Image (cartoon, rainbow, N blue to C red; front, side):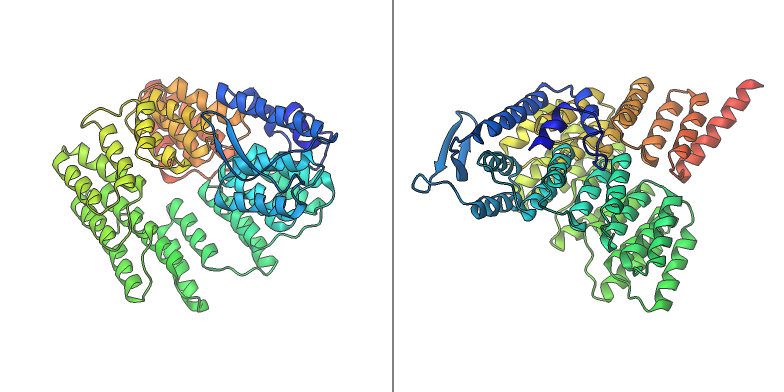
Length: 525
């Protein structure tokens, strides 16, 4: 309990030299949302109440309760005036975490500690996993520190992996490194999942050198290079313009006798698609189906995205329709790509037909998000205000997840609607979800599209101040913003920062650098 109190009020790392420190002062510094301040204030009150309850007050249990936030009425569950047992507390916390009701689980934890109980190892693990899955890394870290402080539960590798994944998902590389150091200090051995978590982050962030170090270490420690690892190596080559070398990995896989599974097929299809080899991508797609492997969302999204990019919009629409016939409801992200290209060609009639077809398949509530996306792209204009848009989705009964917020922020960012993009992030934060690096990258993109490069730069600086490590997309998006603003002399500086951060520039970044250097050189003559 003390650890959570210290995390809320202190920034000194002296309390626990092995802890994952540094996040709290940064978050407190940048809490601009009054709702979030109120949430922290409530947490502080719960801590004080909990300490008071340890002096002998009996606490009502929230097990099986229903809470009406509008009038604060609580229907509590009693056991003949007796205290709820230790085992029942732990079981209930785990059940609530499994159901995704993290707030109730945290309230129950506070009441449990008020009675002098300490959560079990399983309860601690469930809370860390549940908080990490919804981006509440600050609270997940607090629970982890309390777990260490109690001395009753020795964290296992699964807990470390959960925390590591949460930090890397938000781009908090410094804190992730501290988790890895703590692993060594406590002599907890990494497992296959640990390496795969690191590998996925390094590939997605464009950190070429770090990726090869992880692969080399896996080989040295005799961890198997499975289809996941090979698919990431293919993606690494693909993103660095070495697509033929990426396909050479496929031959290596076949020589080893490792069967091509869905993950590998998806990586190969995406590699062909990215470099415009659409015929080969479709051939691999057909071979995938002939071998009895059912395409998933990633397969269809990849084919549709690259057909749109290279101007084969009608084929993309055919694939989009076929995807629905196979029983898969489209990802809103891929729907944005299709709508964007249809809008550019002025084909509103086609977008209307697509929308009607989707709604006719019996997905009314999910279809609300697609209606909003079409509207954002300018046909009607009702949902140009983010707050009105989100309220409309809530009235439709749609559960707003981080993914939905991300899709809406991207849609507004694509249109250069900066204020609305910011508003989406603010509403998301007010709902208890913390924006990650992907959403902050979208905000940079929104300001860049609107020609407001200084605001884009301020977001970039804000990312670094928050302790988040910028990735290739962050730097490339900022470079694009300065290119649009014709501030070509600043582009090489951003490129240098990208390299110094350990990121390997992709082809787009290299092309922008060459263009900027050429223009700067011409201006000097």
